[in-house]
Image 1 (tube, rainbow, N blue to C red):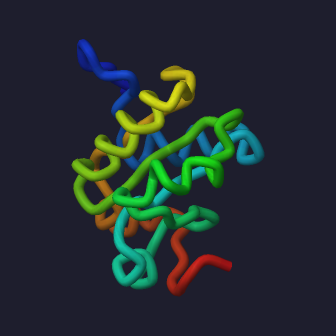
Image 2 (image 1 turned 90 degrees about the vertical axis):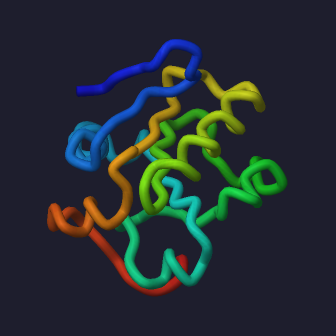
Length: 119
């Protein structure tokens, strides 16, 4: 179940909840993997983009801020930080989600996954 913690400008969701959001309207959602490129290449959410957390602010213009943004990393820490960053840049908090169980759980759940770099 989607949850918001007091003071956080984003919602926390599981990988299964993220997949439900994607399935509802894939054209209005963008998954952003904020891990390092080598981590991303080893396995990532299908159709996600890779913007390492340290690059989120400098590459902010690459984010489709009119879409629902689902941030993911290894265990939810870096993606939570990325959520805070984009909220500080003015993205609507209702469009920001942290997939807090991370990529390994996404893959374990047999959800759509790719390997290699961005297409």
